Length: 185
Image (cartoon, rainbow, N blue to C red; front, side):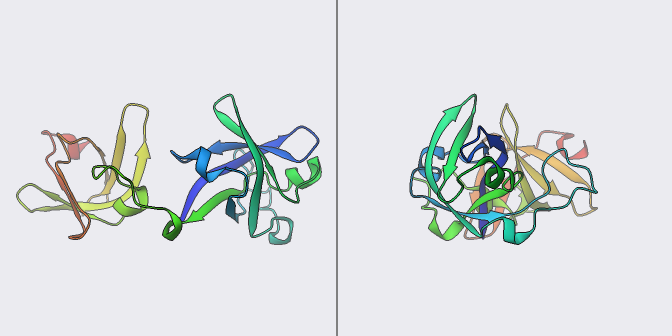
């Protein structure tokens, strides 16, 4: 499974650097010199539906980080082989990914990667099926489990111990103890 660790926002300067929006808790590792990233071409954010996705030939299947540095909450990244602004422009909107098999498990037993949680069954403390975790929303206050309810609606469940007391990866489920009304929103 591919995990998105960043997205190219736009070129930065004239020497092939790009501004990257980071989607990982480990940017110093994922964007270290020599790190190899898998690319997925996407329509740039804010682009109209008539703007084409960059052709696959314009975006190499993999990019190797030559250098990176922080810049206003994002990273400025230079990739091997991207030497000028035109080459950097071709990367606009590209997702930067890694294979989940290459990501070591977290050291903290109470820490989970998004790909480990997506697809788990959400059940109540009594064992009633509440739905399926379909996404993780990284909100400013806390992470939220996006749970697709059996009737097709979506519920946002704060991923905190008081509401999600158990994560059973081997059993393929998360136990949810929602306060009254949480799943009805």
